[in-house]
Image (tube, rainbow, N blue to C red; front, side, top):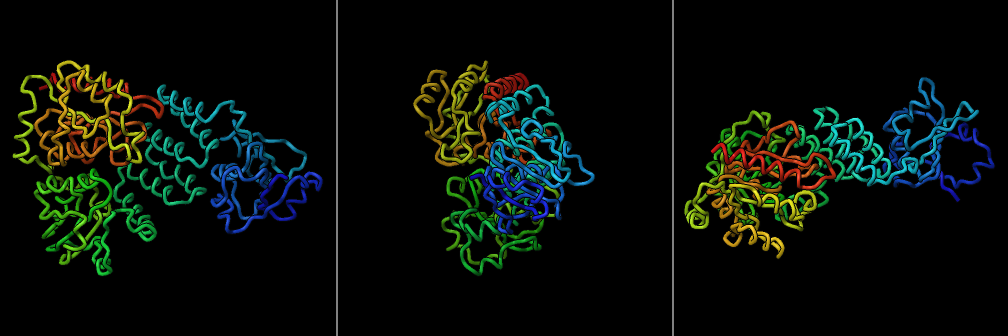
Length: 515
């Protein structure tokens, strides 16, 4: 028997013949299903029919979308007619996948969900979207995203694609609205974090990090080691958590969180904090970057995170790096910055001086792949060596591999193009910084090496896919953290790295001729 959900009174249900209603097993709305306009607790494709009256409800595009989400293929949406709204106009944004059925009962509007009318699969529509982007036909691209969302409403891909497509078009005030639709029917931590990241991507750091901290209050309560595997543990530390109090003549501890790149990136903020009068800054960090962070002129002490809870007993405040900007009134763009803020250790430089060939050719450090266990490795790393081989064919360039690990195919490629492999001498990030300091330019994907190069203010070409992390900003902006870094990105969500490599080669040629 078919299943139907009723969000309507008996008077509305009397509009339908008993024999026709007999095909359904009725379930009635309850508050545990969430708001009537969004039904967040109900899985997609749950019902064959949905009956809704207009009692206390508004009919709009977002609501219509959410109701369609819970319907199965060929499902029926029966709405009580509403004055002042056209039934045809209501379904117009979804006309490719929803049909309106005329009927003689003026009290009822009938719609039928039929995504098969598209005649295409999700992947087919995905391809259409990307082709539209490549043509710069943003209207068609956004239409494709709407259809993707209807075919797979629980996937955030279409929503993220819409945000970045709008930003590519120079529209920066619709991101939050886009995500509101997503959040209305998919209420979970990941979805909210997604929304926060869209705000950060637009460069609105103060609002973004404030929202992020509110979210992480819940995250830390449920998963106390989500931000750091060695979080502040003692109860007395809770009272010392910094939330914007004056730092004049105070000792502030910046506590380790997330990856190596995050800790290197946010170490930049120590300069701004010192100018606020902070007497002492202690940085809690991961072991591979301790030596490098000790070169920061504004950081007084660096402690390995595993030892922090035992060693840190006398200080005024502590804060997670990502929380700092949530409590600083001055916009990040206007804050005083020290560029560069990290430096190479001379003793380590001496080792690499022997390995770097002295000639007139451009000396370029290269990283094309990150840690394969990283959650975003599929998007950030280049696994197809074809584009890398094309890059190694560049004229007047000597490449130096800064990638810690290579598989056999990668090793063969390095040997074939006589790329100098420095990885055996890269024991920590201070070693990496020493090597970078002696090179002319760095070409890398989104890894911690990018942050080291940025902190040293080394000219860097950052290779990115279409969907990027918030820290690299939108298409319209220069990098806010590392002014000597240029991002080169995919033009569409379905592409390959060849376009990026072609752009990198052109950029390297310009750098080479400008020396």
